[in-house]
Image 1 (cartoon, one colour):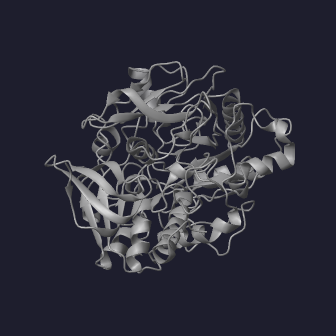
Image 2 (image 1 turned 180 degrees about the horizontal axis):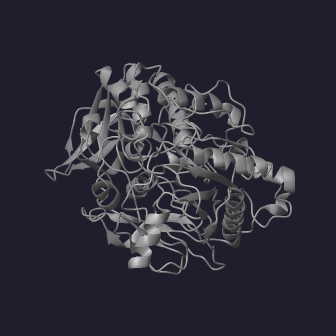
Length: 576
């Protein structure tokens, strides 16, 4: 029997961007909030002196312990799912701040097309363009409606950027100028401009200058040390939840962040959520934290799994198409997006690749969303092509041209020669939902507490493969225009299947939003249709995955959710 604690106004699962934003906005309006965070406590000071590639990039010190809880995965419904046991295949964030601490800082806005993807596709191409097994749908909201929340998130995080020349309209400029130009960025920009494309600096949460956000929190200017992805920022120059929204919430005196709290259930009476049940990972004691409002703001796997374990909502059944919870799982998968592309090797040019930061680079949107005409193409949606100068750390970067021996004297010679003479560009592709790509509870494997793991089934379609092939071909074109002497160009096989890797952290769906309860679990304020005091915030509510990094969009919808929760505190009922 769980030990029941004193009731609070709101209890939140997770201290990442989604949970941190909601906590900040609720505490600022006077509400008492408890955040339950499974991982250990982390402060900015903990990251000083932690530029340790072995510890963080090879041993994954900031990531979830997969021997205690993980996911199982399979590439089709007729196969046995197996657990993912190595962080090299699943970099799932843990500890205070979640994945918002170890992210790169790329902060794109998604396109108007994304939020009305079904209706805009039908309007331009007709219903016949929708694939047979597609479960794509409109989100119930337009870009114009979510734009003010994008603006709010960008100002909280101090995004450094320049206006996308073919991007969606903005109500204001970025709060900070773009990151530095470098010879490699200029090379990419010149090549893409010469090809008729429209390059621009990637929007960055690594700041180009010191900045004080509207809540009074200071974010320092970046020093381009190259230790962003998989690392906390020791200089406080990368916007993360710890130095922004969590700091704001703590200043109110209304927030308690309770670490080591592994949430296992939503307690409810069938109509209302009454709190969260969790296990203290140190003592093993089970507690129930009652609250007027319950917010699930964990990662996509956490939010979906908690609803399934708590028997809230109808589980999705791919055979009948009925049910919602677990439906429309999508993502940026390694062998279709983000980690494929074209790598160029240069004999007469040498670059200072060891300098960089998580979102230093340039991008083109000419093939994003529906920006290109898909009438004669055998896929929908598109890809955002970018070059990023993240900084090449020594252990992970030994790239050599194809045909080079993988060991020995010649490998060492070529590795040293090309260490600062190679560049990589990638097409980050959208992924549209299909009826056979979803999440449910695994019937075999359980976590350390005896609860079923979440099972992920990812089935690629020909359209997914064709989209990826097209993106790689454009990367090859651009790398050739950049003057590479040799190229390694990735090949997307005709029969490519999901490779059981969850490396990008860019995964969506399972508790999708929409305009009505018939095709969605939550409304556009992230409020459960069937349990009005339960809000599910984060990428789990996205009906599909765009070709951009998701954090900016997660932040925008978290601000909208917080607004909805504050409205609910005042008047109750479904928020409109």
